[in-house]
Image (cartoon, rainbow, N blue to C red; front, side, top):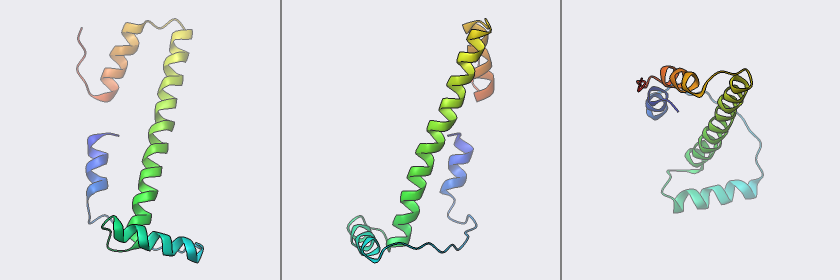
Length: 98
């Protein structure tokens, strides 16, 4: 995840949207218990944390898979490793060694 995106995610003043979700009562009780043990102020911040963790993991996996697929395709089209490295460095904002 890019540093700027990460900084935005840490901003506590981000706009929030209210949603309604149906969750079994026993799950809510477990969330309250676990939230208290982990130091959360309630179960809703714990649910947001769980959603955020899962979302970040999926985004990383999916975005990583896209890059891997693109690299494999470029190699099949005879694009050199050096050009692929330079393009990746350019795309991620890192300086190239050449």
